[in-house]
Image (cartoon, rainbow, N blue to C red; front, side, top):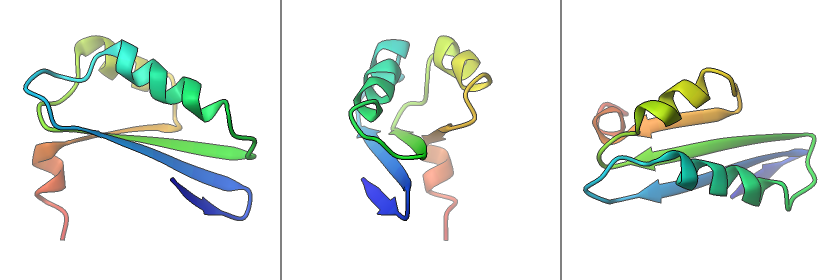
Length: 76
């Protein structure tokens, strides 16, 4: 978790051999409701990517960022 002014960044990393599913995604979003900030951004990092359901959900939620392992390796 990172905080700046009235914004928060919540992150979770899953190092599993299965894609992150919607239950894990919604769990992170639900945890964010425990905090009272004007803006909360959510980052999910995954070794094996995300299910189609999660990818579809992300299209409707601009505060959710999905980072698969192959994209992490491109960061410099």
